[in-house]
Image (cartoon, rainbow, N blue to C red; front, side):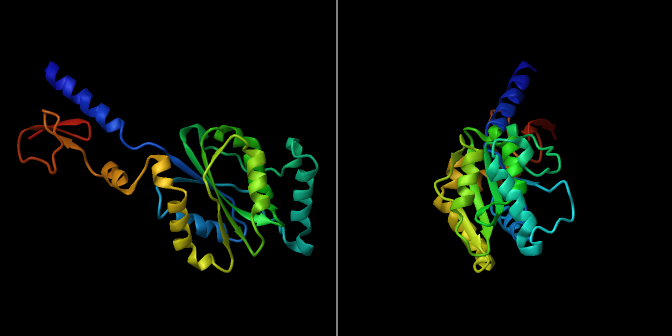
Length: 233
């Protein structure tokens, strides 16, 4: 009996020390382009997803020559350290402490990061200090240097990936290959401690005999450990 308890504890330890490096994809999408990018991205990596939404619904940021969007950006630019400068967003319920890697997916507004995403990073960016941070930016045509600067201002202590990804409207349809190439370029799977083999192993049942040997299939009879539980046949 003591040997059985020891083996069960050993198997549980082995199971709990496998895959590491949880990723959270945080996005804001006004025109649906960023939502499509996130759908494509999460088909290629294991990640949880958090959507940022404005607290005030139905706003038309682009109306009257983007007057409202420009007003929000100007307010932030005038007083970037004042919480009152940032537009309100819906409450965030995710526990950022649970994640080691963050991928920020945001649109570009007049060469700056979209105001609602800036609000999120102003409120929660401090929780990303020392963690991996990646940035994917969607825009019509403009370069993304202003958005990168906004992100690094709001998350100054993030451990940023070596490259950011810019997906503009002209190459949006090629986002699958663009994201694949970006993940390879930043060495995502190695840096986060996750690869496809580990992911498959995590999803598959773990079966060990009482000597602690990993089995390729369930035995027809006997006693073994499956996913940390004793099974008797």
